[in-house]
Length: 91
View 1 (tube, rainbow, N blue to C red):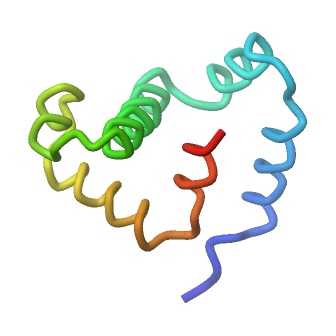
View 2: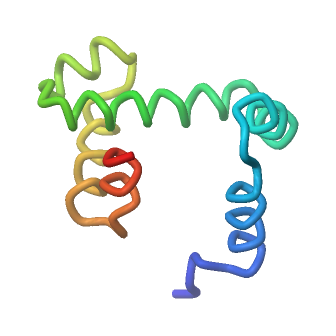
């Protein structure tokens, strides 16, 4: 299986890191993604925050509109992923 850390993903990560204020970041995100994609990403982040706060999977699904399967997947990656959720939640 090819690595997911492709040169184009690394380039995207670098540009995201270079954007230093919310206004510019929001403008960039809106230009690079559809409203639906942005909603999906922000809802997944909301679920991660709620998981971190100790809310139940079922309550998170009800609050966010995500399926319990998606909430479970987010929880899995929070516990067994690359550490990105943990790092971001600590900020």
